[in-house]
Each structure stands twice: as C-alpha cells, then as structure tokens.
Amino acid sequence: MELEAYARQVLDFVEAHAYWAPWIAFILAFGESLAVISLFFPATFVMVGLGALIEAGGAPFLPVWVAATLGAALGDAVSYWFGFHFKDRARHVWPLRLYPALMERGERFFFRFGTWSVFIGRFFGPLRAVIPLIAGMFAMPQTRFQIANIASAMLWALLLLAPGAAAMKALGY
Image (tube, rainbow, N blue to C red; front, top):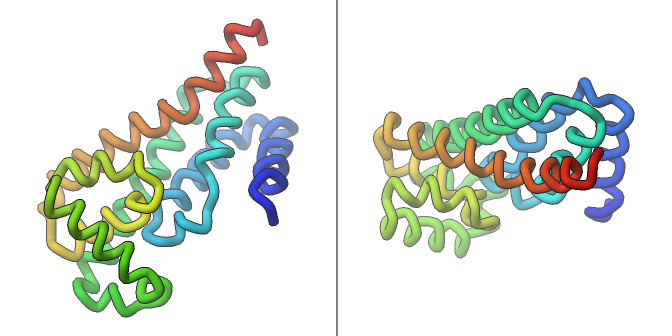
C-alpha cells in the first residue's frame, strides 16, 4: 500500500472516531520506535496529519501527545531490552541481519555521541531504527538510557503533533 493511501485511511478513521486518537497515536509512535520495524512503519507522516485532525475534530491535544510519547518511549525501551538481552546475537536475528551497514553506522553514532545518541537518534529516520537496540547491546546504563529516551519521546511527539494542531487553530478550526 502506498504511503499516501495508508496515511489517508488512518487519518479518515481518526476523523470519524476522534476518541481513538490517543490509541492510534500510541500505536503509530510505538511502531515507529521499534528496532528496524520502524523502517517499514511510516508513522511520521501520519502523526503530522494527526495533529491537525485532533485540533479540527475537537480531540484534546494533551492525551494524544501523552499517548504518542508513551508509545515512542515504550518502543525504544523494547528495542533496548532486545539489544540488552541478545547482545551481539541481535545482529544475526532477522531482519537485523539484512542491515549490517545500518548497524555499523548506528554503532559509530552511538560511540561518538554516547547518551546523546539516544536523544538525537530519535530525530533521524534510519538511526531511530537501531540506536536504542545498540544502546542495549552495549549495556548503556538503564537510567541514562531512559532519561534520554523519555525526554526525546516527549519532544519528538510534540514536534510532530503541534505544527498541524497550531495551523488548524490559526485557521480557526
């Protein structure tokens, strides 16, 4: 299914059922944050449109933002756990074994920026797919990981949802 058709279906559903907006935001953010799965889960585009829909449809912004934040943070936490549990064996698990160059790039980024790689990586598409996993593989301290994870999830969700909501508010919807 093409990205536009997928996005339109999700947005049409939310438009008709605004009360589902927090759950949809959670699922999209979770999928967008899971290691490697996020490469095939085009949620960013939909999240921007979701911001506009929640404002136009009267859905409250805060619950959708919180749900998106929780979904993103949980997705990264699951990825971290997978890396922490499987260590170097994670490289050989499908679909990770199909992306050795991405894993190497993620490792270089992680070793260059440390804790900041978790925060910064959320905002860069392909890196978002592997940084939490790599942080787990190399046993980054859980507290440092979670602080960077939650802070970046909060900002990421805000940056995706707020522009559409603000535009609709400015237009008087």
